[in-house]
Amino acid sequence: MSNPPDYKRLTEHLGEPRFVPLPGYTRRPEADMLARAESFYAEMNCRRTTRHFATDPVPRRLIELAMLTAGTAPSGAHRQPWRFVAVDDQAIKVKLRAAAEEEELKTYAERLTDEWREALHPLGTDHIKEHMTDAPWLVVLFAEKFGVRPDGSHRKNYYVDESVGIAAGLFITAIHHMGLVTLPHTPNPMGFLRETLGRGTNEKPVIVFPVGYPAANARVPDIARFSGAQFIQWNVASPA
Ligand SMILES: Cc1cc2nc3c(=O)[nH]c(=O)nc-3n(C[C@H](O)[C@H](O)[C@H](O)COP(=O)(O)O)c2cc1C
Image 1: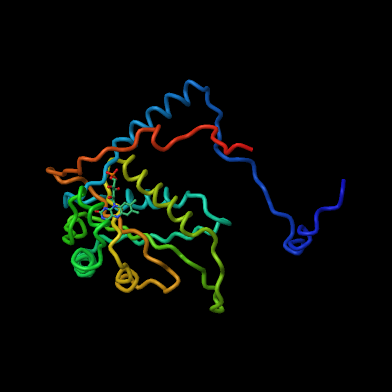
Image 2: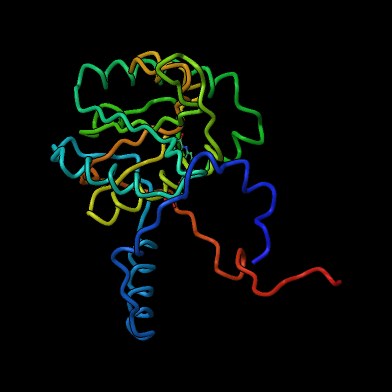
């Protein structure tokens, strides 16, 4: 065998990486996969973002399971740069809502461009954020931009936005699958989330997820999803 390329020597001092057999994998018959895929797509295609939540309580374990599911996301260099803060303390929710509404009022009144305002119009949103105090849980997702070692030095994370985005998707999927609803809420700017929840400056707030049951009169905007043909292509390459 030829000598390993030079770059392998750069990590020789770290020893050999360790491997274990791929856990929990079962190869399924194609018909079985198709049935599962069809049924999962149908289930996910029923997911909608509603902004109307019931105040009924939701057990903490369900929220924990959604966060644990999010934590199964792949991440750049396995840095797992997501941090979830779950809040069901009404006093904290009230504080978060007040701060969000203060920012959102400025956003809707002064910060939105005409183009952005037009894009939001079909959703019927405004600066009032009842969901932040109606929903029994607010789950705030932070991105750890870099780690901090015990000696205070910084440890770089990789592909943070991509990794946290994938975790957010898994969280939303888990919530939908268990029969609850959520809304990815991105109040802008979001610095108040870090301050109110006492997070470090190495963490960037990304999304607030109110989670709960839909209100009895919950509605959703009358909007449609792309058909597959609008966003899927097969075997497209530029001519050589
Ligand atoms: C990154 C992101 C940010 C969003 N921010 C907000 C928000 O601040 N307020 C809001 O009411 N909805 C927000 N949404 C929800 C979208 O408006 C909603 O997902 C979209 O209209 C499609 O509707 P659907 O989720 O029912 O398919 C956000 C969604 C995403 C993915």
